[in-house]
Length: 212
Image 1 (cartoon, rainbow, N blue to C red):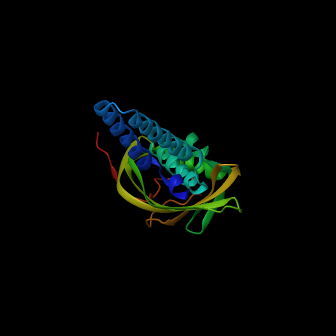
Image 2: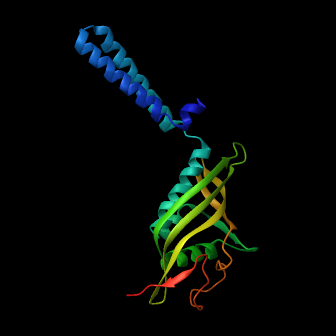
Image 3: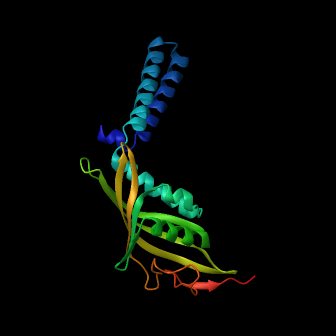
C-alpha cells in the first residue's frame, strides 16, 4: 500500500494501456472476454487513482506545502506564503530569531521588493512524525531575479540558500510551517531585524543595478 501512496500514475497508466489493447483485441476477434478484461483493467486503474487521491501520507502533505511555498514565493505572493505558516511562526538566521507578526512583516517586506525569474526546489527531504504532529523539511532553493530598493531595481544572479523548516499539524491532514531556519546562506544575507527604511540591504546574492 505504501507503494501506491507514493505514486500510482505508472500503474494506472499501464492498466489503461492494457484496457486499450483489450478493446483492440475485442474489435479484431469479436470475443466478449476481451471486453470483460478491458473493463476489469479500467476498474483497477480507477481504484489505484482513488487510492492515490485518498491515501496521501503526511510526508507527502509536507512536501506539497513546500512546493506551494515555492509557487507563492516565485509569484511574490506574500498572502499565499503567510497562509501556509502558523500564527507563531519563527524565523531563525545566523543566531538571530523573530516570531509571529515580526516574521510575517519580514517576509512581506522581502517579497514586496522581489521579482523572481525562477525559484526551484532541490534536494528536498521531508519527514512527518506519526504521533507527535511535528515534521521537518530540508531543501535547497535556487533562485534568480530582481530586488527593488526605492525607485531602483537591482538584479541578482543565480543563488543557493539551504532551508530547514519545522512543521506542525494544526488539524487532521493540515500541516503548516512553524519554523523557518536558514542553514546555509551567503555572507551578506540581511538579518531579519533590518528595517525597510534603512540603507540598501546586503542581500544573499550579488546585486547589479539595472539600466533602463
